[in-house]
Image (cartoon, rainbow, N blue to C red; front, side, top):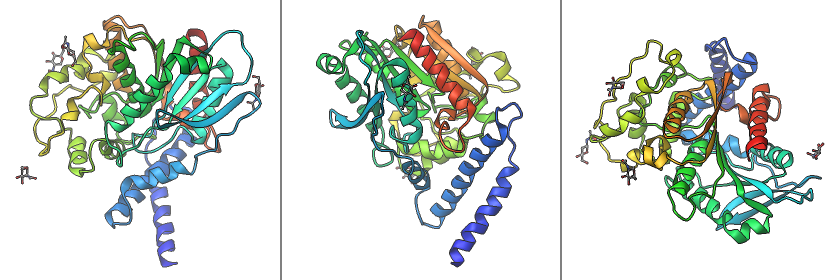
Length: 401
Ligand SMILES: *[C@@H]1O[C@H](CO)[C@@H](O)[C@H](O)[C@H]1NC(C)=O
Ligand SMILES: *[C@@H]1O[C@H](CO)[C@@H](O)[C@H](O)[C@H]1NC(C)=O
Ligand SMILES: *[C@@H]1O[C@H](CO)[C@@H](O)[C@H](O)[C@H]1NC(C)=O
Ligand SMILES: *[C@@H]1O[C@H](CO)[C@@H](O)[C@H](O)[C@H]1NC(C)=O
């Protein structure tokens, strides 16, 4: 009883405190965003407290919260929904019931959740994929890849690659009546990271070179070699995604050793000898003037971390580290960004780099947008912005896939 009261009192204080946290003026449905942001901040503070007193790991609160939203595979009048596995990896399939003369397009969907939580089966993703399948008459494949920290890098990526390659087999495509020339890979947030990497890997694999027609990346994270890009600084405290939480959770994809998190927070995590890759994030060449403001690009301090993680210079972890020849001939690319998003500048850099090597990029920018909105399309905190992003993305698919 005493413990519960204590927790309740603590939550109240945090809640009041968080309500005062500043939220940019120019945001759609500002109060709803503030509400969601507050819940995330309270959860994060509680998670830190619980971790400090040894009750549970920081990330457990978030992964537990995500599991509350997992849905069963329920078919409706238009779509048959099936949980199965491809090559041993769980997937959820959305198969249109409508008869069609033409073969169907397909979307391979990779969910976000900072590599540590979430599922393609949660309410928000389930509803997005159902909607996509219905609107496009498309087969949608949601991948339930393995999560960190239990399964660190490259488990998630390997699962996504395996599922994609399995699906791309001729007999599998024809089994689902999929047109092999109309396949898109899509991901949001860290799902966008994985989608971008899978697309790069397939593009550089002779057997799969031209098998993907398009990639769609919704506010993806594309690098953490420099954690002080202008958007990282300006949206350090969110809304929705904030720097400390993001780095704490994301570092679990590499290691459980919290010294990496500490180094990431100070932007002193990159090893000696990695200077040559900073040309990919030196944003003085890439960002529009309005985002540079009074920020000055400074190269991070190298070689301070007393542990070696060779993966930090691996483009399979950070797709922005792929060199120009690896980016050439990537398929048609759709990137959606939000103004008020920590990860915003990653995309702006990637877009310039892709266009510089001749990749066709369609870029939609939500001037009043916040990170993660696509995950708020169900329940009481549904954001209009979420529906807007969904509809733009699906409209783009209708025109281009
Ligand atoms: C089935 O598709 C029709 C036509 O697109 C739509 O009006 C209806 O709402 C859909 N049903 C469900 C359950 O989504
Ligand atoms: C970053 O890029 C700008 C423009 O190309 C260049 O002048 C500057 O020296 C670079 N900074 C570092 C630290 O490499
Ligand atoms: C750094 O690593 C070396 C070699 O593994 C070890 O001997 C040393 O104690 C470490 N220093 C710190 C401050 O952790
Ligand atoms: C690009 O990276 C690939 C793979 O790491 C490497 O084989 C290739 O030589 C690099 N190309 C250039 C131009 O640096």
